[in-house]
Every structure is written in structure tokens, then in C-alpha cells.
Image (cartoon, rainbow, N blue to C red; front, side, top):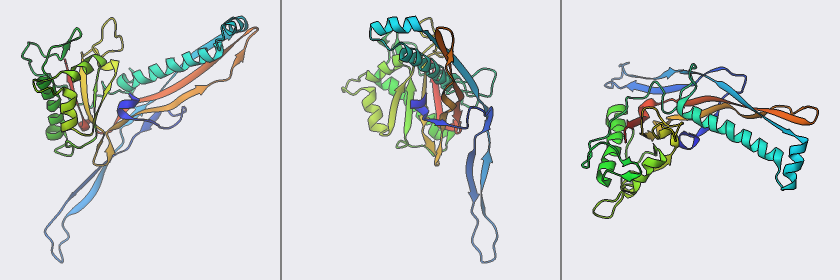
Length: 285
């Protein structure tokens, strides 16, 4: 999630609610006249609100297990701390995609202000998928046409041309869908080549959360295999960012008779989408 949107710290772990500024510049001109006082410029300002969520995990280790691990040259305390950090980071990353239910805390895939998802075009081989059971079932041109539809949605229908082919963009998809980028047409040109030629500042990032939710991908999207095209910035404003209020707080170590334990805490605002018009998504690939 941080690779897709960028990651920032906002506030501290004591902050429960925050307002994030969004600014829009406006104006109109009028015919000039020495005594004319028409025409004006100004700024619209809004402050969408988000709620933070603090979460924790606990590690514990005993004297005997530390010594036994040490015989195998394993730093048991360091491994335990690493496991805690990994656990916190995984949940933090999940919050960047789905937010936290019950709070004003949303993610890249469920922010209520995102536009409705597009449906992929029907393919020559049947169906709408790019990849089915590990096999590419769409041509390179068909896959590229679906991505063009995402670009058209942002440019023509959502930003009125404020985004163009040279805008820095992210094409986010599941690792399985990324296989489709290798599909090659009759001229030996694959989808990645087409993207680089037509959108020179696009980058591809994969995350399992864009895959369909199933028994082997519990973190996947319940809506199905998803692709998002995200313009990094519009009119000088970031489209959004993954935000946390506490990256890692290690609480004091508590000593027991022959063991120790320690709590670690992180906090998240989810993905703060400031310009939802800069994002288009497609479900079903």
C-alpha cells in the first residue's frame, strides 16, 4: 500500500480524529474595462475527517528458550521482535487497502468516494478475464484496451483533461494479473512495451489484495480480481497517501520470575484519498 500511494505520518498516537485538507483553486475572467470590477478568483477548501485505529501485539521469551536458541546461534529475542514488527506491518498494510470497519477509516479498495468499477470488455476467447487459472486468456491488444478504458475514465470523465499520457501514474494489480503484462501480440510487442511507449511515466505495482478473495488468498478483494489506475497528482495535489499516526512504539519490557514480555503498538489512518477523481478501477479481470 505504501509503494502505491506513498506513506506519511500524520499526528501522534494520542490523536483519534484528524481532518485532512483538500484545496481547489477556482476563478473566472471578465472583459477588461478601466472601471470594470467583474471577474474573481478564489479557493474552495474542504476537510474530510478520518479516525485512527491503534493495534498491538505482544512478544514474550523465557531464559531457558533464549539459552537453547543460543546454542544454535539464534538470537531468540531479535527473532521475536522481528515477528512482532512483521505482524504489525502486515496489518498496517492491510489497513491501507481496506481501512478499519466501524470507523471513518478507509482503504484504497473501499473508500466510499471512489467511482464505480468498470467491467472488462468481452474477449475473443470468451469471458472478460485476462488470466484464468494461471493461463493468459486475452490478447495483448485486448488487455491494453482495458487499461485504455481506465485511462479514458480518469481523463475524460473524472478530471476533464487534467491528467494526460505524461502524468505520473500507478497501475496496481494482483501478482496473478501481472502475468498478463507479458502477453505478446503478433508483432512481438507485449503489454508492458505498449504501456511504456504510450504512458512513459507509468509504473506497475502488484499486491495480493487486488486478487480475488479465496481459500488461498484471504487478504484478497471480495469483489473479485481488481485493477486500479491511479494518477499520482492532479493540479499540484497528491491524490492520496497511506497514513499512520504511530509506526512502531515499543513499550517497556516487563520482567517476570524467569521470563520477559513486551507490547508493541502501531496506529493507522488507512489510505487517505484526497482526490478520488484521480483513480479508476476495473473488477473482473
